[in-house]
Length: 325
Image 1 (cartoon, rainbow, N blue to C red):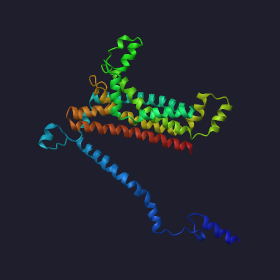
Image 2: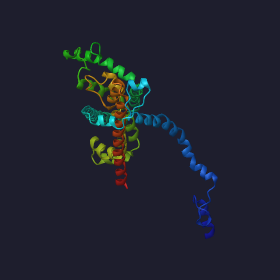
Image 3: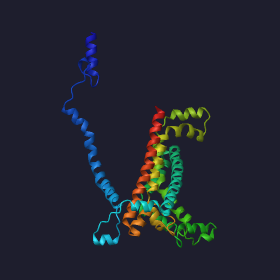
């Protein structure tokens, strides 16, 4: 009888044959192991083709002195690391880098705060109001970047803008013909409002989806202990969704740091190049000043900065996993 039980247990145990020896692997097992790699092969090939080769060409261009003269004469002039040396030795580069960091930090803080508040609001609303709010933020999220930027240019237009009209109606008559792109701070204000408006739906929807995974028993226990909304957020919601906050913040840092369309379309980095961020600075130096090698070098340095941020994020994730273990 015991022999029959052992035989049945051996048959039921996955990967265990009679006598405790693993079953022999045939060709079918090797094929099943290769299926995941075959599935990701098209995406990997497209990534290498569209991004990898472009990155390699841009890297090669960053080591060249490429101006209109070289383009016309079809001459390739290699200048080593001169472009990098010139960029890193320029005070303008470090000024733009510092401006980009401050701009990114301010936007990410606003995006996360407003997005989390809307996400928590979605979790507390009724079905009809939640559906209405979700529809509104999804439409804002789905609007193309260029179209949204154009709308904001109309809203903040000097003569016929809705914003100036409303401010004038409310009593701020000095704002009737205010030029929002005449100064550094006001231009950054318009760009920040635009970027926050476009980014908040992503954070809000993801936070709402994440809150649905939190067991309701935790909130009930916190309520019995006398915890209010803020205490429930700090003791239940935030600890449970800490990985979400970490990943979303990192994604927003990358998205805001590399944003080009909004910054360039509003005022092309003006006035007097005071609102240029690193992507706009690379474009102006490369395409605007027709020093294509320098523009490529600045773009590579921008990628290096993003890689450093990625490494820091991965370090935080690994540390968090070690703490949980």
